[in-house]
Length: 121
Image (tube, rainbow, N blue to C red; front, top):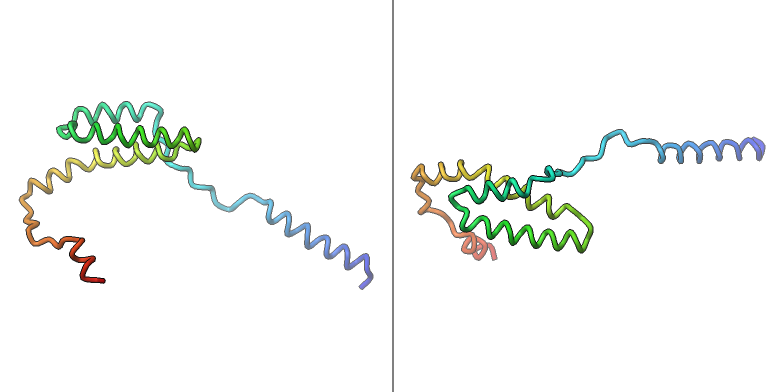
């Protein structure tokens, strides 16, 4: 094999590897959850209408203020999205939690997690 043939083969292999690295991925990246622009205001209105408003509204406002300050510092909206998503989940699951509590489930036989962790040590 001559030097020029070896050089062409090596160049062709390098070019192929580079082209492989630059090709499009075979899967689409997962886009993060992004609530609608008015979602925080709508969520706050729903929280105010709930029977737990006296505790939930101040808690939401604290979490929102903390996430807003964090987003200003880091230029990231992820914290704001997480607050909205978390509170939407709490609000959506509230009827199921109420039904569970109203069912009269006897939880007097529960195990305290602090006690359980103490046993492991």
